[in-house]
Amino acid sequence: MVKATWLGHSAVLLEGSRTVVIDPFLTGNPCAACPPDAIKKADLVVVTHHHGDHLGDAYALCRATGATLVAMHEIAVEGQERNLKAEGMNIGGTVEVAGVKVHMVSALHSAEKGSAAGVVVEMDGRRIYHAGDTGLTLDMQLVGEFFRPDLSFLPIGDRYTMGPASAAKAVEWIKTKKVVPVHYGTFPLVAADPEEFKKKVGSLAEVVILEPGRSVTV
Image (cartoon, rainbow, N blue to C red; front, side):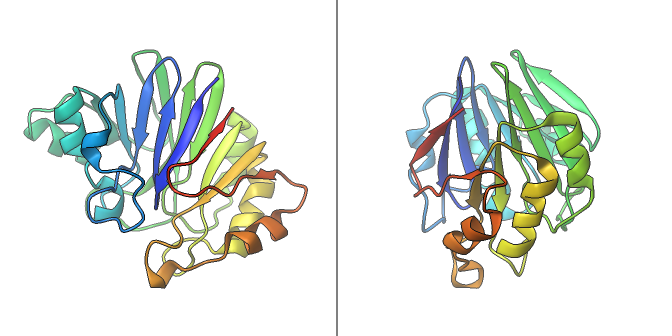
């Protein structure tokens, strides 16, 4: 069993036999559920891409908790230059840290260093897909075929990522059991309506609309 907590924007905390933090943009996030120093324990800090609203507090969290940074090669190198434990990878690859597998999958988006990606985190018999920032891409069909996620976190904010309509199409392709919309409502430019997303998904999956700080269990 894995407890997944949305911390606001695209930040997610996964708690099971290990603790995994994904895209910890907390400092400067007006919707953050907690400050970074509230996270006292982490085994992995996973970053989908090198943009400030995803890289966020990753380095500081790794330093404070001793967590291993798992990210695109260029981000991992930057972490190692800061004397952090880091495992670099790239799209198509898998890294295992402390019994947790991180699979890196495609995303359509820009990045300041390296490329943007999504990740599938495999822990305690569950598979959680975090799409990062992305537009709709047929590669999501491969995510569905290969991983059949138990839970997915998909951006719906539009403008910089998928909007509600394209994110709903992604749900069809991913074949996820549950889905949580993220990357919306943080700033006016990404003020999407999660209820619109839920309506468009219909019976394809269970849509769980969370407030920052709330959780879903798989």
